[in-house]
Image (cartoon, rainbow, N blue to C red; front, side, top):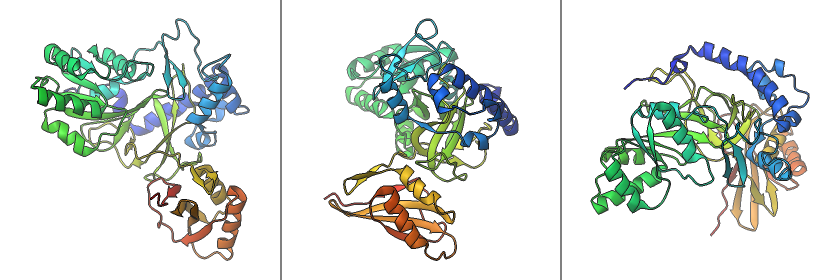
Length: 415
């Protein structure tokens, strides 16, 4: 099959970075002018000066819960909370609702969510019939895939979810070559087909999303003749990353700028360290600047073996929002970051909550270089100041804490 979707995938990395950073100040200025929420969030920011990743990292991160709060506050006048740069009418063919509810606009651009790139990498080609088993109800998942399939020249069967027997009949009679949907529903279809004796062997390739696709399940699909790949997309941002034949992480999409930051902060972490995915999209209709996905991942070193030159992430590695209730008080990752910022000698920290329920023990494990007189006590005072709770402090050598993105670990016994 043709290896690459377009020439963007094989650009010289330096040329890609230069082109992304040239587009960045224009997108920041556009967000300030066209999206009232970013006019407030980025008030006083000189867009023309945002020409490097260092400058981008100084801008505030907007997380999903903040977007929801702004939408709720503006329900009567603007259901999008000031984040949409387009208004209802010809510019906005559809509106979607994600849990919250969070409302998302759809623009008119061909392949609006840029899913075609991921589908091409999964082997989808013009003329294929795609059995699309994402939900066509309220959320945009089905339309993300459908628009990508249409951009490739595929025909789509809008299967949606449920009604398994009817779906098996449709597959047996229509003979689709490809599947798009969650990996769990694909497994259900294959298991039910085996039980019922339905011939769905036309399905040979799949692009999954909405859930993790572990290697064991990917291999299970392969044993049944289906080559499955995974995509990482959200309703807000569209495609963020996609899997290739190399099966070594997910390659970043060409239309986003991705950072990995320490959970609870906007501070980029060193390459390879696990943190929260923060994305700036170049979508003019919904110009999200430093949007925190709430998902954990890490950058992989080097390019994809397939020849695609964009950076890669490991994939989904958990959630960044590790807010925990301790002795009746909520403690947030941002508070842990606030504590550690007070001490330049602290490299990394992890708050561990142990003990049994109603008898919580809170310990801040801290990586620090060398010996620092009084550091233990000063950190203990900062814990009380920031969280209003007493906590123990454990000083550790650099590199002692696991690289899993956790800032707060709930190790309590719930028996």
